[in-house]
Length: 584
Image (tube, rainbow, N blue to C red; front, side, top):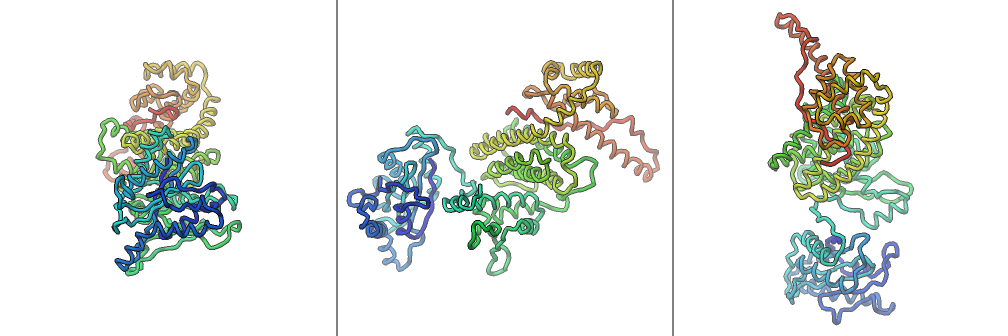
């Protein structure tokens, strides 16, 4: 059951809509089911047609009487005096009777402070039903004694009362809102999109483009220039004193299917975290060290993103283990940067997985919004990795690195969902689970061809048996499951590649065995394959870096270069991912 509180200034206008045919002739049998004083209330819906308009005006005047008295007494117009709250049952719920809807209306006006039970001087109100699945509660917000009602937090109180009503009437139990959700498109916006043959409204399309632009931008100027490049109209709100930008609005490009004046939406009307202040908080966290580093590293951007995500996964797992909440602002910032990474990955990933990643990024927009204030400066590393995906040429060519990064991203997303659940962020946790469906699908689309290619190049039976012996030594408790995993041939090929690069198979298996447990992995060989790929890439990068730095040191210090072939770089202690197909 969903209430939606709003205010206005025209009683007659709202009544005309409630008793009219609707924007698509969807209103049937409009009539009053409850009111502040049922006897004597004129009901235009149950009157002859020739009296309909006169009764609408009479009803509006009747509801507005306390408002006019107050205006005459104070000499001031009462602003936004019309209180409006549609209440709709969830799809699939049974249809309530008029008597049940009447009780729902009485409980909501009581809970919101419009008309508390037993208060004879409360506001005047009516509840109109013109469809099977919802009613509209309308009130005028001046009490009979001339005072204004106390309606602070009325939306939250209406939501809380609806949760109780759902339980008592056996309706679908919806999740309580936290007022961080993006505004829904109106019926008029939906009808306009339908007429134009569009699958989404202008508001929804603009929201998606704004999120993608924010993920790619390094500063405010780049954000707006990116939107302009897409043909989106940008209108700035300037401060009257300083002339500084204090807000902005966006309108979709001209559409020949939908001519007329452009409809602008402010950033906050698209989503709370797209307001100018929230955007500036995020973009201000960028600094000189938080920029793409094209050509400065020996690994590709997908491997760099994987490395940062593995570190983030370790931090999330440790916080979950300790149960501390002192770092919640840091986690919220990491979640925001994770959302940027999904958007940028969707823009640069191989085309076969782009649709699922775009869907994952869109779903995570909701998972990323909570009441916790993000400490954006703490997410510089992940944000930089996200930018690297956009600013490095050829970033989508290493299919193994793409699949490995997505596998780690799945593990991070699972922990972010659990983090939201632990803090009763129900909407965010639900959105994270929806994101997980798309992200896992993208992972499978990326991983399956890579694993199949590796499996087709499985080493000889004798070599594979030798690797199996090494595996039993490194994973005595999991060897049977690993060898039975369909991905074992792919892992054997990856071990052969590591050995040909100069690594001892048993040593690298032992090293990656210490990184993370495998108890919760549905496909342990698959998990180890990406872990091994990431580990050997790190070793190769470290050796290249050492070979570059040590001769320089020998020149500056007068010492002989060290033998780089005999020393191994220190093993990193970063935790690895869990299986992409099972929540832990």
